[in-house]
Image 1 (cartoon, rainbow, N blue to C red):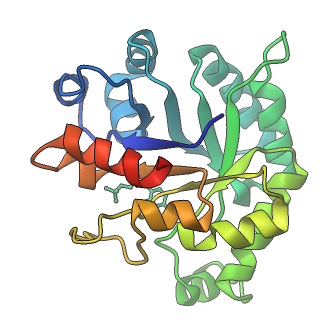
Image 2 (image 1 turned 90 degrees about the vertical axis):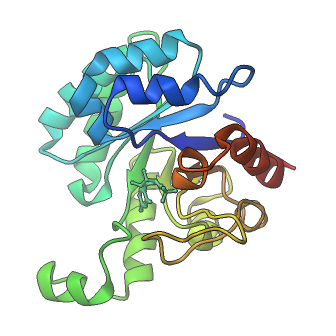
Length: 232
Ligand code: C5P
């Protein structure tokens, strides 16, 4: 799939989401739906956005025993999302089961990517609460390698990690990267950020951009600027 800008639709409900999308008369942006919107509106929001012609990253971060994840992925594959995800911490067996569940009888399937360590987990919490004592960036790369070995298509990571992930897992292994801000923009709660142009230079395959577009005075102009900076 070609490189693209994905808008994080972190909205509480369908009405708010459609009101936002009404501001895009020409483009059909690639959208990300997370737990908040999915749990509020259910699978219908996915069907509706697909019917409107959007590509969709369904960011539900599955993590359970392999059989449960496999069956859940089978259901998600019927929803026709373009990208779905899970936690690499579920182990290789879970990731392989997920791929099996996701693959349709005709062999097609959505792309499947893994969350390595959440960016909200820092070294100290990982050591003290998860009892993982290796350096965080080593853990992220090891989880990315597990995901690649299980046959997944990529990982969610920071643009700052995209180069290392590609070096470890291959240039074709996708890096889907949040933490993107315009040069003069508010960082909000994101700490390690890059601009869309920097993300491009670092080799990100997809940037996930939320508030710099959704909270902009002119979301359409902000989206177009992102696309221009990231895709050139
Ligand atoms: O508003 P903002 O651009 O920070 O939104 C980024 C999006 O990417 C949010 O939906 C957030 O949940 C998601 N995300 C992230 N960091 C991760 C994984 C997902 O910011 N490590």
